[in-house]
Length: 307
Image: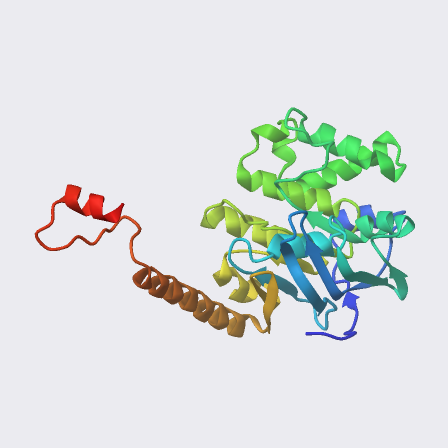
C-alpha cells in the first residue's frame, strides 16, 4: 500500500476527442504518481475528515481504483486531497509528473495539477456551468482559458458533447439535466483539459441500473486511470470496468487496500460487525423512559419518594 510505486501510464488507444484535446495542451504529461505522506485533513471543529494516511496511487496496469466506505468514512475528503481541492492540514500530498515534483500548496504547481488531475463531481460543477446556462455555452466559456479561437473552442465543444452523448441536449440548460446527463457532463468537463488521471466523487450517485451502466461505460472507457468513490460495491468487481484495486475507508482511516474481490468480502464483514455492535449496544442500554415502581405503589407515591 505504501512506498514509491511505479508510474501511471496513459491507457492505450486514443479517441477523436482525446486527439483534439491533446493539441497544444500546456499540461501535457504521459504519466503521474500521486503520493500521500502522512497526509491528513482536520476540520475547523477539530475532527478528522481523514486521519494521517500514507498511500501511493501509482499504477502497474491499465486499471482503475475504487474507494468504498460508509457515509462519513472519509471518501470525499480523500478524493478532495487527491484532486487538489483540499490542502492537507498535516503531512503532504505530492505528485510526480514525468519526473517533475509538484505540490498543490505551491501556487505555481496548483494550476498544472488542475490540468493533470481531472476532477469529476456532478454536485460541484465549474462556475461556467450555472443552472441557467446551456451546455454548449458553458463549454465555450470554460475553454476560453485554453487560449483557443472560437472555431477551435466550437470544435472541441462539439467533440466533447458528442463523446458523452450530450450533443442532442447542447441547448438545454444545466439545471434542466437529469442526474444521468449531469454525471456525463461532469466527466466531459473533466476530460476537456486532457488530464492524465481522473478523480471522481461518487460518479454514479443517484441513478438506476441503466443510468449507472451508461455513465460507468463512458467514465471507464477514457484513456486515463480513474480513482473513484462509490457505494456500489458490486460495480467494483465487474470485469468490464477494469477496476483493479479497492481501498476501504472506515472512521477516516484506510483499513484495507487490495484486490477488489477481497475488498468486497472485507467490507461485508466490516458492515456486519458494525450492525452486530449496534444491536448489542441497543440491548445493553435500558430505555430512558422506563421507571421501576415498588409493588403495590401508586404512581403518585413513587413520585413523592423519588423526590
